[in-house]
Amino acid sequence: MSVNTIDINKLMNHFDSHDQVWLFGYGSLIYKADFPYLERRPASITGWTRRFWQGSHDHRGTPEAPGRVATLVAQHDSICTGMAYLITPLTFEQLDIREKNGYLRVVTTMHFDGGGEAEGVVYIASEDNEAWLGPAPERDIARQIAHSHGPSGPNRDYLLHLADALRELGHDDEHVFALEHHLQALKFK
Ligand code: SIN
Image 1 (cartoon, rainbow, N blue to C red):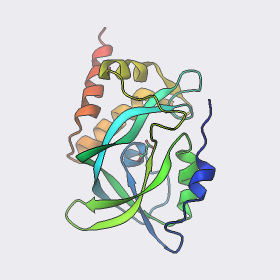
Image 2 (tube, rainbow, N blue to C red):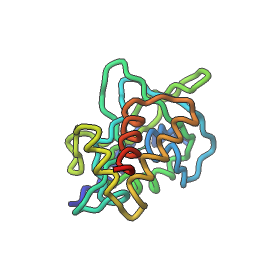
Image 3 (tube, rainbow, N blue to C red):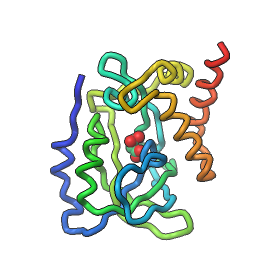
Image 4 (cartoon, rainbow, N blue to C red):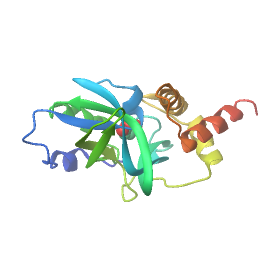
């Protein structure tokens, strides 16, 4: 199965007149910043919660055996913590390729830790994309993650690196930490 959002994202022209744009990362973009950026600051966005409900056919799984990666799900009053990066619009070419498996650029307001806010972009994979897997018991999600591998490596590394990065930032995320707990418990079975 292939879902490719590159062409749709190219049509996003909201920041065309800007020299610099803030990008909000909440998944692998927190711990794997393999793109050029001018500045990075811990930040959060409201109204969204992080969930491992997106299938990964290209990074942490395959089309035959997709892994599970993070996306955002709308939830009133929720706060999603992550990392904001100041980038130039050219960098979207690289990011659109990285996020091509169902993620669309969405305009959001991010609040920087320590004060201040900015309008910017967040990549979100919503339930109408072909790679969407949706909710499942956290134990089952952890089991799927434990068994999935893709071109970017084991799915378990995605989850464990994200959990470590959130801890380093001093952020709590019940869903991510519950998945980490289940994943680690699987090792001893
Ligand atoms: C993000 O990190 O902001 C998007 C999802 C991902 O690439 O893991």
